[in-house]
Length: 340
Image 1 (spheres, helix red, strand yellow):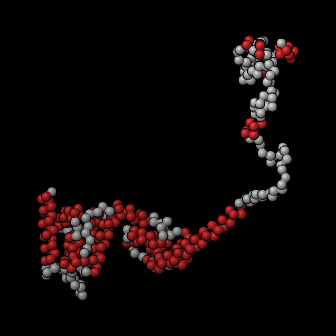
Image 2 (cartoon, rainbow, N blue to C red):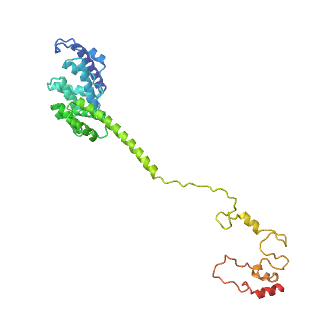
Image 3 (cartoon, rainbow, N blue to C red):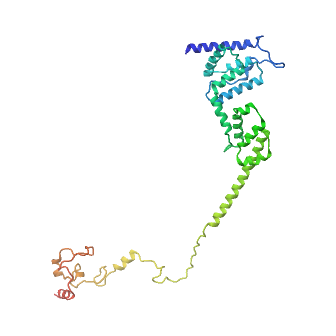
């Protein structure tokens, strides 16, 4: 690896020497009349871009176009174009060209600028990619792109069209461009029959702006109409009217009467007894020799011991029969026991 890098560095140095010598070589092909030869120093002062062998075909295409732009501004012979351009190849691209140049020289091929471009495209822009780009161009539609984005993509892909390269007709280009426009733009532009591409793009941009403005105004009208419909469909709110006080007390049994609270009920039930002085409800049995526990059953205190077991309350299971001793005696027996 180190040996290969050393050889590559030597080859680069030799190329630079050849480039400088080529500027003074009398055998170098002459330029056309009125042109001046660009020296390698002038070429370097321009600051041309480097290429390191990117796998992206668009970047490879962009680098090659940049080099051709430089040669347009500063005229060079074809030999100079190849030497200057290949000097800007770095890293993987430099290793590739070193091998490709040897193959071309062994085959006796004259290495011109066209030869270099063909080899460069074959490596970094293969036929399969170019065919894919051509298919993308044929199927190109504006869809959600604006006119500027659609035009930029159209121009970038147009150069891959075999039909356009064979016959670069302005009329065909305009017709293909119109065919990919959205319906609202195409409807407005088709009747004008514009066959100059720059004029066609300019008119499409004007129509696009007018279409956006019209759509915005329609949207505002729709929103206002929708708000009016929603406000008209809202139910009328019920108003609450407060009655003026009349000074009358609400009648008993009406809905306006406030229900008694637990505190008021408790105060009413536990009022103080006038006979015993205690608070209880119901009948006062003080001094009547009656058992309070068994009073509700009619049992006198003398007979209360035989009923020491708890009496069933209202929570007893329905259907169970009580013992005969617990059953309520008749009113005559109650009176006799109390008198006894």
